[in-house]
Structure formats: C-alpha cells, structure tokens
Length: 169
View 1: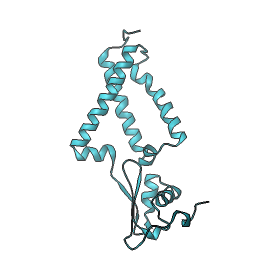
View 2: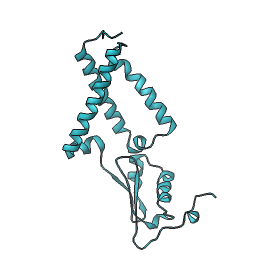
View 3: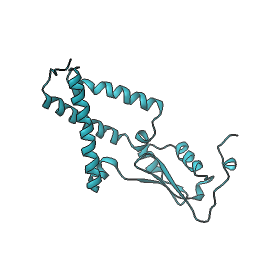
View 4: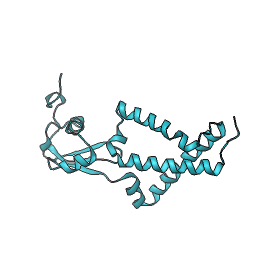
C-alpha cells in the first residue's frame, strides 16, 4: 500500500514528462479553451487526467506513488510559475501573448479564426461591457486568461443593456 513498485526517480521523471506534455497540448489548443470551460471541455480534462495517470505512475497504485506524482506535478507547476515570472520570453512561450480581435470597430478575422473565438463569443463580451455596436469598439483583446477585454471609442457612450441587439427580454 505504501511501498512504491517503481523507483522514485522514475516516478518523478514520468510526472515531469506528463506535466510538460499536457502543458504543451493545452497551450496549443488556444486561450479560449483554457479560459472558459464548457461542459465538454471539463469532460475532456477529466478523461485526459485519467488517460495520463498510468503514464505517470507506471501502473503503481500505491499511496506513495500517488503522493510522489502529485508532489512532482505541484513542483513542476511552481517551477514553471517562477520561470515565467522571471523570464518574459518564457512567459510568452508558455502563456502566449494577448491577441487583438477588434480594432477601431473592425473584426480581425484571422485572429478570430486562429484563436477559435466565435462571433457569438465576441458579441457576448461586447454586450458584457455595455457595447451595442462594433463601431463603438476601439479594440477588443483576447487576454492570456481567455477573457476578452474591451476598450470603447472615446466618443461613444455605454448603451443601456435593454437596447443592445441580440438580447431577449
């Protein structure tokens, strides 16, 4: 129960490899998938964690192997966090850069496609800040967190929520 059947260094190495593999895969899927989990995204993450479990523990289901694997993942996460805070180039590689989706009322279709942001998601973000029309937007940015930040043109004022198109009463 407590005695691991695999060497501790092998458990640590497996955990490190799986951590960085998942980091890479999740990074490649885009910001929106990480920032806002839909039910199918949550199911994917749960199944993904189960799929990599044996790769991490090599079939060792002892308590010690679980503790070692969990500790390895937490340490990896802490190291990556510290490295991205210290080295800006690493932050760009791991977290990416914010992406402009709308500039001066014009949607940047290439950016929307590349980041897998739908028109509906963009419009929901605009409505969230009281924006009724794209012409009111100076720029909208997809942040690293998956959140869309919106800066309105200076000459436009916020529209009342009940006057925004696409909303039902």
